[in-house]
Each structure stands twice: as C-alpha cells, then as structure tokens.
Length: 427
Image (cartoon, rainbow, N blue to C red; front, side, top):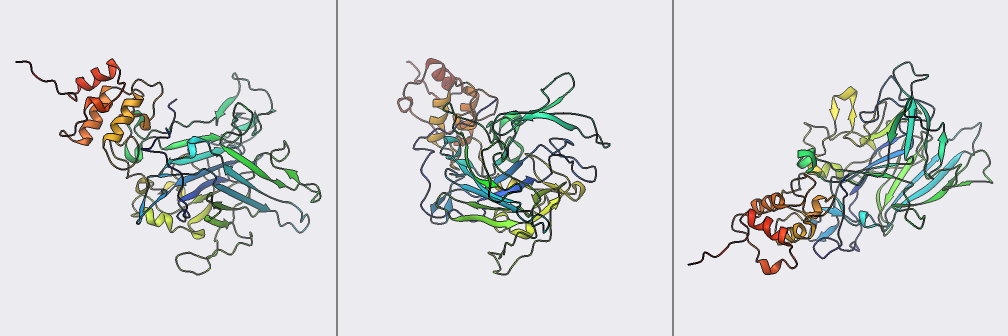
C-alpha cells in the first residue's frame, strides 16, 4: 500500500492562512443514511460495496474543491484541514416520541496527513473498520451483516469465519497517488479512506476527535459520543443536517439538511431562500448531484453549489464519482483535478528544482508517494522518475550536482543514466 506522506518542508508545508476558507472549498459529497437493518431500496446497490445490509454502516464522503488562499486571488493546490470541524445533528421529530435527537462534531486533528490535502481528493470516513456478511434474508442478492469491528474497536455480532463470510474492509488507506497503476489526471488514485476509530500509540484518536451526545428515550440521560451505545457520530434519515467550519470557526458549508431540519438555507449566490426538494428515508443516501460529465462542469460551479444541488438517492458510490438517474448521470470531477502537472512532486503547480529535490529525498524510499518523487506511479523512486521530471522541466533545465547534497552513488548513477549529469570530455 502506498502512503500519502506530506513532508513538512519549506517547499510544501506552511501553516494555514489567517483568512477564512473559501465557501465550499471542502464539501460533503455523499452520506449513507441506510439503517443498519435495511438495504438500499428498489433492489439498488453501491458501485463499490455491492448490496449490503446497512450499506456499509455509517460513512461520509467529502471532496476537496479549493486550496488555501495565497493572496491576490490565487490559491494553493492543497487545503490545510487541521482543526476543521464537521458538525452534525438530527431530530426524529416524532410527536409520539419527541425526545429523540442528537448532535456532535468530528474535528480534524493536527496529524500531518491533513496539512496539505490536494484539491480533487475524495475523502471517505467509515465508522466501522470491518464488517462481514453472508446471504440470508434479502431476495435480491444482498448480503446480511453478520458481524464486524465497530468504531471503538469492539467486535459486534458473530465472529468472522472466512469459510462462510464475505469481508468488507474499511481500514485506513492513505494511498493517494493519481499516477498509480498507469493513471493520470482525473483517472488516477485520488482517494483517501479513514477508519474513524484509528488510534495513536497512546490510544488517542489519530485523525479525528469526536464530541456530542445522542438521546435514546430519556432526554435527561444523553449518551455521550465515544460511548459504546452512541458510537462516534450519527448519519441517519431523522431530519439530519450538517455544517462544515474551518479552523477559525468560519462556516464553509451549511447548515444544510433534508426537509424538516428547520434550517433556513439562503443561497449565497442569489440571496434568496432555497427549499430542499428532497427528504431521505431509511433506505437511501444523501448525495451531491449535478456537475455531470458532459454538462460543462467547472470548479466555480462546485463552489456555487447549495442545498438544491443535493438529493436523496436509492443507489450509492462509496469512494467513486456520484451516479444518479439509473446511471445516466455521472459526476465529473475532472475540473477539480486538471491542475495536476506531470513532474510536479510538491503539488505547487510548477515543475522546477523543488520537485527535483523531492525526487532526491525520496530516492529509494519504500512505499513512496507522488510527493516523494514517484512521478510515474510505479511504486519506486528511481531514474525513470528523474526522466519524467526532466522531460517536464525541459531539456535545457539542469541542476548542478553541488545542489544535491548527500546524493547516494545509486542516485548519481540514476542521474547519469538519463543524461542529467553532463560529463566533460577528456582531451
């Protein structure tokens, strides 16, 4: 598994700007509201998961739309998410049982992974680490959930038996590399998946901190988030809503939610109230629609998205572009990913000596990423990557050997192999 490693050096990692993040620079793309005991309605399935009871449990999917502001109307190609918050809330609004509600926050930690998340990255977060299934009750080829590893790491249900169970693994995978497996541009691996319960060595949560509470029957005794009964967060069909805030507390998206949340959504474009024309049920998901392939989607259109760009749906696409209308609509993510340039190891939009230094630092590294200089996505940083950089930089581009301190013999040999070092001819 390749790891997306963000090395904090002057050429890449800088602190967040003091100004507020751009509206919709980080957006909810899809959320699973299917109740744990049910399946997607109308015999539908998820393009990644198939047809599962609970549709993979509580999961959220986000898309990075705009980077940190540089000033002068310019932006980085990466977004610093450290300290950002995803706030959620729900209320069953049931007259027969009015005190069923909950709210909470998922806050991004200061882990280096969040320091510079590239624009166009799709981030999926699953509360459960694993779940296992077998065919039992569904008449449409679906699999019933028999057990799993929940958010706090405890086993639920039956023990896993590989002889009879189908395993779905939602373990953390930070293998971001758009050039992997011969990809490129929007076609490569732009995904990061996080198991929400991932821990550090000291048992603290690694990537997120969780807070809040839910009410289950007795409003005088709320169940705290982080307890076995409440889990880590909630996604459901009970007038669920969300808000995204940057590290300074500025609202980036929301509050948005299905009909009945009591949210007054005023369009930032027209200044007029926008009414939701959707209401998710216990066998559906929430997803961003529009921006379809062939519709001339642009980054600005994503930044202008609001409540009416979200819909309920009976099919889903965990970790993949959204689909709707029985597959006739497919989300176009290329406007968010066309900034990536061949040879640009530090993701600053320019192929220059800084990218060469990234290659030099990553030379021979195990499980390298694009930011380590793996410019052809083959899992190795070697002379072929140097050739990619040189071709992108231009035949006239050279860097003196003296500017590459502590370059190993193998490193120098790779440089020589692609004609990077010009040897003087002896007379």
